[in-house]
Amino acid sequence: MGYSGASGGHEAILAAEELVRRHRYGGDSARLGIDQITGRLRLAVDRVMGEGGLWAPDLAARALRQAEGDVQEAAQLIRAHRSTLPRLAYSEPVHADELRVVRRISPAFRNPPGDQLLGRTLDYVGRLLDLLPDDQPPVPADPAPADPPPTDGEHDPRRPPRLLGLLREMGMVVERRGEGDAEPYDITRQPIRPGVPRSARLTAMARAETGALVHLWYSHTFRPGRHNHEFPGEVRHGRLPVRVRHPLTGEPVTVAEVRVTEVETIDDLDRPEEDRTMLDLGYGMCFGHNERKAIAMAGLDLLVHRDDGRTELEQEVLLTLDGIEAGGFLEHLKLPHYVDFRSVLDRKRAVREAVAAR
Image (cartoon, rainbow, N blue to C red; front, side, top):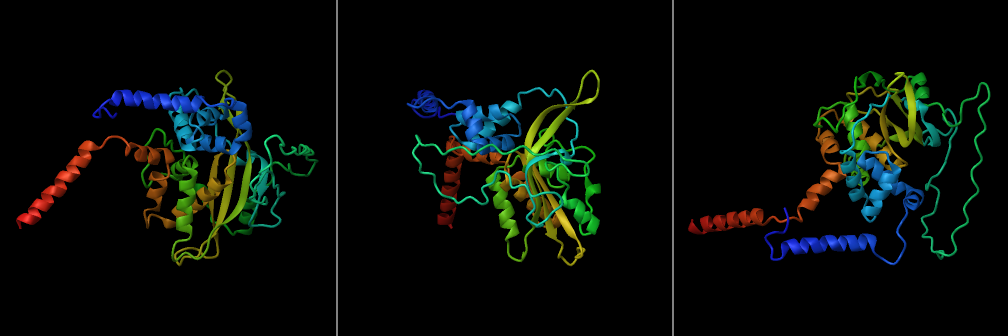
């Protein structure tokens, strides 16, 4: 619905579109290149791909440039573009153990199986604004040395064993492997409502708006009556292969790699109806390097499972975290609502007249 009821409405809309083009493509500085955005704004590009549900760094960079840095608008552009693409094949299941990590830490264990790989992180960097002049860029660091190849009997440092395996050997973690879905739930083709399989919840959270996801996790983690929080067992960031079956040979073929962040988080079972000798595990995985999102996702996975339908938490996870849907509803409020608001005023006047008559 446009502003057709206002005088000069059509001309005003065209002028507004022209202003968008001027600010988007005008200015005195050179236009941002796609390589600049993918190289210098990596985390923003990762968020656009994650919330848009499409791994395509160059397209995400284009969307981010077109949206003038608005991550949510860029994600909406990517998701709209994704809906126009033909589905050529279905990828084969890939085990997360194939993740070739560039960063792997275990906040829960000082010496977990395998190595702690700090990798690229802001965890130990002071939040100080860099005020160096633009003509004096900081000197880039030397490239990191390549990993030595593993020798006989040694594990690959880029594929460390999982902490979960140690917990299973200790008999300390609840076994939930039998709860997997026979086929992953495709939320792009089927509606999501409370009671859907776990894969639907994980998919919905994987493309949820990061801030909304973190807020929901935080609000339920520190609500009254809850006295503990989960511990991330492992936080991993690395590259995962994508495989499809060759149309002629029928054999799986690796066609690409995607960067993902994976988190396994541990919680203490402490309710009267739970086995208080055991631990439970939550899981999160999302596109790109977004540890904040993956940790909150794993925490919510645990919270929904332990809630078991007592509250509306699952409904909130499924229906309120999509930033594009929430933003779309908000944006529509700016469109004309003359008739709706006029009916509200008429009802108020009718109530007043009824009260005055009595």
